[in-house]
Length: 427
Image (cartoon, rainbow, N blue to C red; front, side):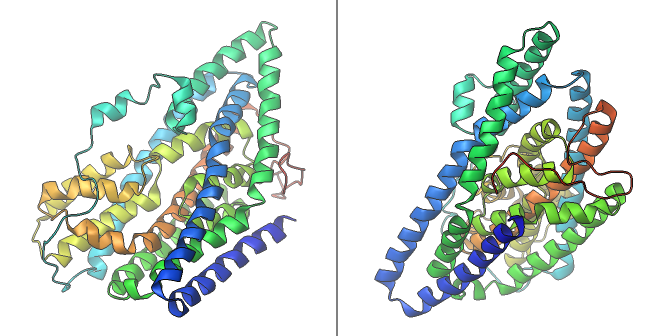
């Protein structure tokens, strides 16, 4: 059933591309726009289904995991290791995007002229507001806005409190949360049955609206970005092999479905339920996954980080701006810091670029150029974000689970064979 689900999603992706191109080429503008509206409606309905389950899924998984832990002391170490991993990964990936963009000379000779405006919000990042907003003023507001970091803060405190109560013999609420987690995994399975439809609608809408015409002018930028992403994937998989050995290949198989969903929908949220399922099947304890992934969604955006440095160099070359190495390094550092506040922001990568690059002499109107082709680029960077979080969770989770003595029914035994166990979610 698992392979059939993946096949359905891949099939929906291919059919969506083909159908979208045919719609763009064959339909006149009026009917074409009407079709795009219908497809966008279906896409938003699917994404709303996903958003509906994200907050309770994160909360229940996290709280159940912490409340069921033998010790709560390991959570602090896991938190510190996760943040260290995310900061180092972002810095290295941003540097890689910076270097590859220069190596490929993206945008060189394009000769853009700064006219018009960006068409997107470009106010500077408010770092004080970002830090302050980590703490939710209302748990209900955090849940309704699907803010993963705020849910994490409240869920961690709630889970630790339940853990202490459970040690004293009070377990009724903790048992109820455990049952809530099982229910949410079931509901997740039901919702994900609609994934092929959502994937088809999302990809068909993009290609029906734009075809390939709008992307032809910037084909070298798009091609260069995906070549660089491919190289980054090779490096990321090599890192996974270095930490996980041959199990890294099982991890790739376990997360390929959420990566396809992320690629087709350009939504990390849409891939989260399947990512949790895949990591659990790989062997990471659910409580560890429930803790690390929300952090990763806020702080570990490898694909977005690479895109921001890559796009910034593209704009430098396209406008013919002469910027010394020190300024470019400062711009990259600013993008790195700003990326930590982009979780949940629509077109967050573009917003961050628009906020940062004008301070370094790059016209904000250049963002309008990126906006034209953003859908194709967003697909790749979102899938890369999923891969980066999967690898981080698997590596950090294996170390933490072993130290904490957490048992997973899908653990990898000493011979390296993956033991099969039935997941609670519906496939």
